[in-house]
Length: 140
Length: 140
Image (tube, rainbow over all chains, first blue to last red; front, side, top):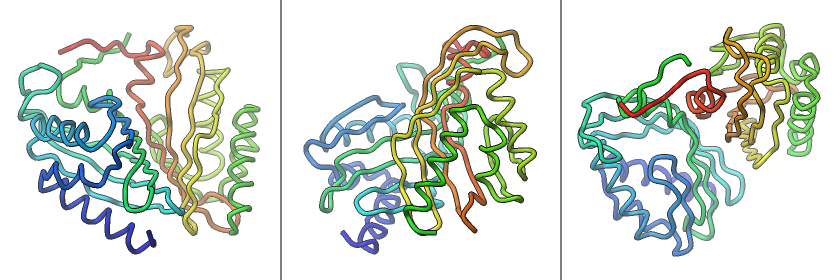
């Protein structure tokens, strides 16, 4: 894909995420795509991707991403963004806390043609769990 | 900067860190570089960058980085590393826990004049504090 096509793809994906359209998001993954997510674990392929997005959207019905930078080199992309949401639906078997989180994040992608073949998500996951009240942290 | 010059800059930065040579590490930044760090907050200039790196290495005195990816897009650079280290010096005023930590870290940089002018560090900082025992986390 050209740089313009990659930019357009990620603009479309952010709109799909903010619209909670898990089917549109999942359609961008190759069948052998591997997604490494702190929140939902390692999963593979579009069907698992769709289920994982549904878990996230159930937990955080107001979840949004705001891309701050898209760093593109060939078929590799780093998406720098802020993610925020409120724990309105419960996560990890726990009831909803109603608490809000906001974290900076970097998602790293390897593309093949117009599909994602690898995605790695890096952010302060433990801090997010503390913000939404799933974990309590105190000085040791 | 050419791609090769940027690759060389980040090699020098990583080698300086792994040699625990904080002065050489700081010399890979511009005089007025701004760094946004979960540990050191937003700090500016080589003296502050040296001090934050020294504080990190006094706590995790065997800390090393290994590079997983370097994505270069004009003057924007994203480096993904794995940090490994042991809390054998005490972190944030605490006694050393002797516990190891290993985690992915991302730095999002802008380069100028052959050096790093701005850097933003994104990683599971809270998770690192839990791994080395500075924080205790339990289900809420």
